[in-house]
Image 1 (cartoon, rainbow, N blue to C red):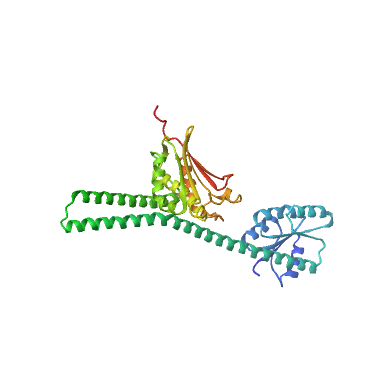
Image 2 (image 1 turned 135 degrees about the vertical axis):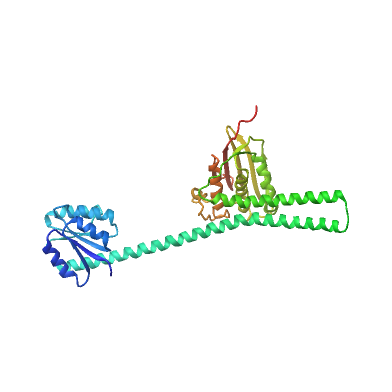
Length: 379
């Protein structure tokens, strides 16, 4: 045992007796005043402090109150005369002292109390060590969740880029073969090149999506928002991205009205809409084929524009709702780890808006994004 026992008493004869009686079993430190005791506590690992109640600078209770604040891991014992018993009991009730010993204290009783206090100290140290290991484990696990979530977020645009580039290469090869064969059908070549431009445009959008994800998780976010964004256009772009998943898993219900532009980043808002759409599509994925429904509604409400995405998948457990936008939250529903929703919340709040989630009374979940209108619509 490397920790010390610290005895504090202004009567040096008592310190000599205690040190003589205990030094064969414990590592002992002594102090005749409170200020010296605090210095020793700062310089050494002290497991137990034993303080006399009646001392000239401060009382033992006052010293142990200070120790409780500055060195909370130290076990505190008070030695007091019978006349100070009420004060000692009060100190125990207030949590400033773990035990008290009455003067005169038998040495065997003192040694027994010290052994008990040391066992208590060692137990607390083991618990603290375990808590630190658990905290480290939780952080590693949380980082794993983040990495897993980011992986899922990046897989979709990466696959989209790969598909677009592959198709573009196919178109280029076809054009080259026709040129090699001296087939100069200008109309056909023009059509092929137009298709090629479209495919490369899809790939560019995928690249922008990946870059947007990287920028959105960077801290601090310092992007300057400078453009007016038509959310209806954003929705159309996102629907083109997820059209394959929608065909396989759900029907789409659209109610997209004409709304004023919002002030923000089109790329980032595409990420928000995509996150909400994919979240809804995954939620209905376990329903029978053709039974899934994802609804998208866009409308203006006063000085704000609102986007609502809902689904008829499983409802969000009530205990998950307060933590749904936490980046490390792992839901028990098929709605992912929360990283996508956390990123979306950050983006929306950067643009002066807010996002909320709730359960539909008729079943399924409901997400609403509210953003301020960028400019007054022309009269």
